[in-house]
Amino acid sequence: MARRTVNVPQQLLALQKAIEICGSRRELARRISLFSPCTSGRIDMWFSRNTVVPIDAVPFVAAAVDGQVSVYELCPEYAEGWRVLRALLLNEHREPQEQESA
Image (tube, rainbow, N blue to C red; front, side, top):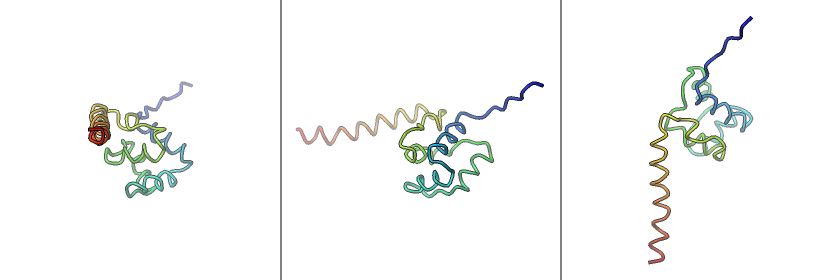
């Protein structure tokens, strides 16, 4: 009998990895809540709808696992946006240092 392959979106695999790092959905939700309100029910909803992590939650999921799952893995369709945002944030970080040395 042939095995049936289920296509699981990459984003949900990344979310599952974040849950495994934390040990449970509840613990991931607790860690996300340090940055933005979240419940394990909200995470359950992402899975039950077989959908992606909402873009407004992506940075907080990545932060909750100390970057062991990246924003690129959680939301690859926004990869260019993440690159632009990263460049802007790095530039902001450098500007105060440049002003101090002037």
